[in-house]
Length: 415
Image (cartoon, rainbow, N blue to C red; front, side, top):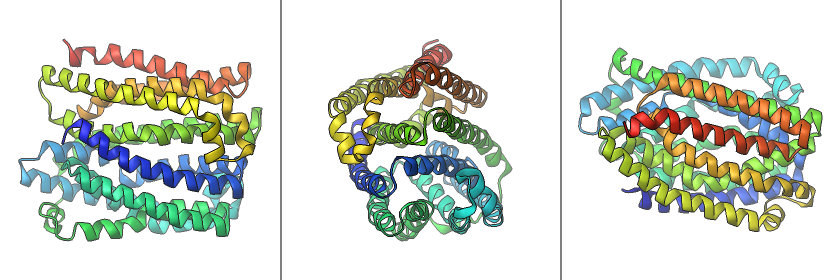
């Protein structure tokens, strides 16, 4: 399946997810408001860190090597067996930490112990979530895009129904419970779909732990864990700064803007993870690599630019549809956020080479450096320009990141 077909399927999946998100965000806006959305944003960032640690950070590596071992069932079986054992090794101890440290985590994230039960529930579902993500990574590596995307569509529909009902009944509590249980429930559906799979069979997960495979996965684990800590932590710091310097409503406006970016860019980022990662992992010739990147820019960049322009023109409607009149103040954030989104995708097309080719040191250094620079730029910009300054910082930081990627990746593409 080529990039165009993958993009079309991911567009359908993303459209359903956006529709789901529209309803969910409308419910959050009505029942919880801007400050509640900011609290959810903080929790989502913490959730991302915990989930990455629970997965061992190996899922990108599983996708890469599953694609690379497409003609070697023996190596593939060793990879999957080792991956499952690493998943258990990381997720089960962390589940105990969440359950027994629930009060601490609630105090740290929400500044109150009122939500400690959320972390208890999360602890009991974490391993199920991790197994679900491992199986999805395997499907991605096998390039079974239709099955992979169908599961994402089911996830979106289930999330729409379950989350909306819980928000209506329990407000913020309902949203948090839905967030920590959604993907764990989807595991049951995924297992049912794989019950008669010709390649993914239970025996492929029963082999002994393979040290060689674990060493390969360790590079990806290191990259994922660094990314999982640097990016969410930088967002938490920035959101805290907005809340303290401006207001928590202002933090909610930025969270809403970030959510819009995430949702409309998902058609591109999903295509990158489902098509580009396994595809670039297979390529060994630079001429073929250049051809693949050129195709990517010709297809994805016009999509991003078109979507960004639509978002900007329809910003009033989007605020009305997704949120409430309380969010009207976020209107000023659109212009430079959307410009930053364009820089982001242009740079990500190149930066995916670091993942595909396991450039561990380079990936770690750039993740830490540009997460730190975003925090510094945001502090300076907010102090100087107010809330809109956060979008100036976002756009400028991704412009710098793009320039760095062009310089760093040049020899891997052209030399």
